[in-house]
Image 1 (tube, rainbow, N blue to C red):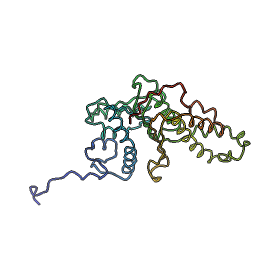
Image 2 (image 1 turned 180 degrees about the vertical axis):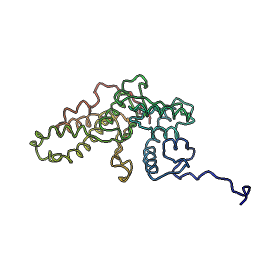
Image 3 (image 1 turned 30 degrees about the horizontal axis):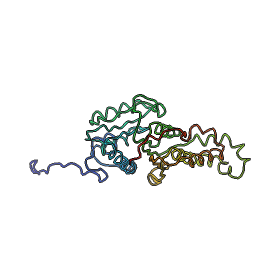
Image 4 (image 1 turned 90 degrees about the vertical axis):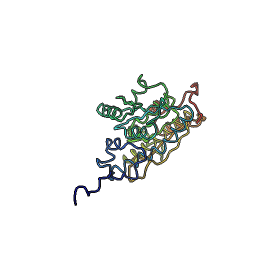
Length: 298
């Protein structure tokens, strides 16, 4: 066949998972798309998980925007910032308002890479800060209030620090996927000897594997009670199917200024019943004298 008779090359057809208007360059940089703009099986699973989480966050973004026009979001334990970048690409890109996404990550090299990528893509309202979750709570680099706080697989106490951050920043919404909860299990293990004499309930965490699993379950129960004790409405659901991740519990909290007394009492009762009183400083209820300043318009 002569050169002139050859058909012109066409761009590869994009995978159906890629949404209209998404940045192909971004998806390639995040290694979700290959160089020839295709998805492999691992990337497809990763993208499915992020999209599933985005489906929960989208109505929260819309609700905040409807009330005030702009929205601030902090993503804790951002890592390579898959979630932050995809949220910006889908919902923040091209908007001329004061909306902003902050990525909090302790690893300097990941912060540097994310900062460079945001600059290259023109995502001007994205910032990445080399801080721990706990450090970010008092950092002057963040505004005094934040609308939405996310923490995707923030390990062990980082999820609790993210909750503490959100409470102190008077966040309207929290979207949390807890991971690797070990602190409560360590306290249960430490106090196991004296607790076993209390009654049959302690049998739940007598064996080491049960201590670990029960500790993980109790940690999330305490987190939910803590949020309810601060006036939040809490929903607990599944992020994705078991085939994608064993850490798939999703906690969504929305501030509604709900009554605090009952969940506060339950929180203290659970801590006392399980011999976890020393965890009271981490899983704390709202002070009675705290003013209710978070908007409930949405």
